[in-house]
Image (tube, rainbow over all chains, first blue to last red; front, side, top):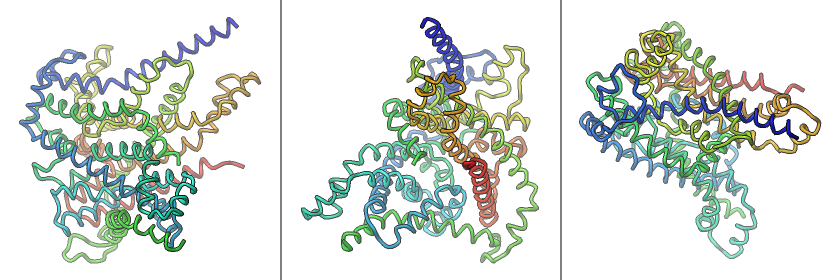
Length: 278
Length: 286
């Protein structure tokens, strides 16, 4: 019994001896983001090793604002992410409900097309999307251009379909006997029951929109209509630019999402895991 | 019954309109475009303008080579790391589980632009913390951005940092779905922990790990933001130009949509072939 507990102790020590350094390496870039963001530019480009945060965060933020209208870019990013998330959850919930709970002509075709194309590279569609939105609809540099095209994402359809198809049929049949209309069954019974799945989906979609880079870079290039990642990205690689400012911007992009992550870790992880394991 | 099912079209229609416009039609459209010379007005059918050119373009082979090197090195390294993370996080002996989970999973939510900026500073030749730390243990500075092999290594490090935790989440979920009594039985039969891992855990995890591999291949195949922002548009001198960046340059800098479409379909074909190859390698031998 005693040797048992000793071997457990040894294994526990070995476990932590591997995990602690690995965790420190993994947290290091995030820590350095904070350090750089609070340091004046001469501190970032000094020959000393600087590992502790300083106090110049607000100064850096105002330097960033002088380089690009970052506050406006943040506002655009927040608004786009919120509207996109709401619309996408609603649209994909409705589609998922239809595919989970009804028999109709074309159903298996729709499912086959969604499943068959979901892993295609985004680059296959981005060129026609750009031509369509920028040249044919003439809608570059608009809110609609930022929000509507990315709504094609079919992950939510599969996600919600799964949730709806696991609900017991009696629930809905009972309501139908009472004469409740189909859309009321969806809104009043099905959607409230699917709330945890919708929450996990909403988090994933919000994150995707918030961090989206390529599409906003292509379609909204006019100053004043840039999203926050694009605004920050245009500064990277310029010579006369405040790096402390860029890092303050990186913190502004990362900190809110990290807070959400900490608060809603379970939903986050459920979303990623469930998206993978169908 | 029939009437009720008709409601389905109403629920499906709004999403389907978006899906057809911004997903299905573009898939068809870029396929057609890849057979058109888009540098003349109006566009005309031409097999040579894009597909003929592609297979004779040294820049394409350079981007293909870079993408493949990243794939072949980065995916196995990352999946191994992710499996280690997941197995260790799953250990009942672990203290401060939440803290470790945060450390590994946090990069998953960090945006590409934000982490690209940090990595550029950290790996700066003269002032970067990485070279300073290397110097302090007697290793000379590495010029991460001026030499192609170092720049490739930097991209691989960056992508691994960003995505290992994501895969660890998926593998951890897989681990937790293995019923505990399997291990209890093995322990009663005095099978060592190491053998339990090799003979029970790994085979049961195989489909999930395979899924992660395929997902990572598809992701790394499309690598764009990192070489764009970290190594400064595929620098040095195209040394880290990936297929995604090559496509971006052709499609959106030179505005040659037909050629960019051919590159996109090459990418898609490669992703499909490699995924099928993986499925074939990982098939159940019976």
